[in-house]
Image 1 (cartoon, rainbow, N blue to C red):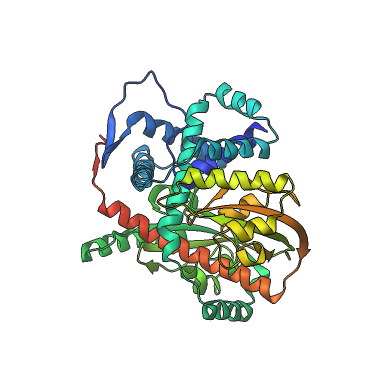
Image 2: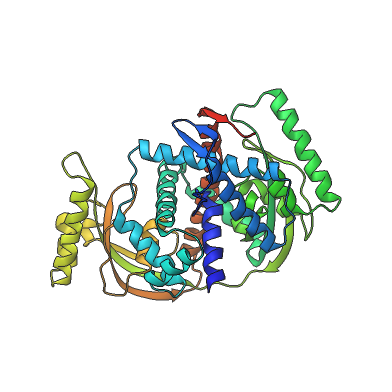
Length: 429
């Protein structure tokens, strides 16, 4: 049970590169980097390095030199600081209710009460207050990326058609790939010297991999990818989920193959196929739902909108008709006339934030207010059903896969630009 919690915490830290959960208060701190108006402290860096070191040792991954590990971890802490600053400066906030609900959900997934979860964390040196702060930052960064990246992504019907045709020709529906990845990054506007230096390093990494070097060690040592400190492991991906950049290479690769250098605006990529397996057929759960949507304005603040939706929820629970309230209150012009009806919703039809809450709502129940980039919702679940792949569902899944690919690509470009535009001063000895 405790190991399961540790793995969850480590995954959260690796994905979003948050500040550490605890720190050695008895140590005298020094500054190891200045990041705009913030700093990274030696205590933050040391504890984060210890966390990653323990993770790699648990996985049996050989460790890179200490100086290399420190630089990798420091770069991710810097990027985290920059994102948090941008989120705060643009007015993104995470209220205590959302934070508490998220932490309760984490405890519940581990089959623990909140008190039990807190006791386990603190018994092993993780302060609960610091845990709350880091989970708040995780939510903050998620909302920032939605705002900064989602607006750049558009998907046409033609793209979906081409995607499905290509998928059928490749026979990729029946295959899944376990992929590891190394990225040698480039600045946003690289000079010829930048290009040559990065390519030399990428060639060196590729050569060593083809001579038998462990890709987990190479990723920890050299990679600038999001999963570098997790050994470059991208996990099991269906052919349809493989990043667009890698698709044409994956089609001709087999288990244990090392790719050619793959160039993108963010740098040089190298992938290795760790394993291949047949994909299982998935049955999709569809949800019949309806909602009421209200957005904040100069007159109605976020709190005003939230309280208004809470009032509507109480009225529905006390017997008022949902459809009538949706017609009179919802600002979704498409669904309001139909009483807020969303019809049968498949995974990927709605935003992840909306779906994650909707999936937790029992049939005939009404959710608490759900915040998204455009505003707030309450949703009522009317029914659920198991449904295998119709054409509409395949298209919805294709749309979500394309959206995720584009978001990953845009996110890389956005983070590169964010880092290049920032003032950062290293003070590592």
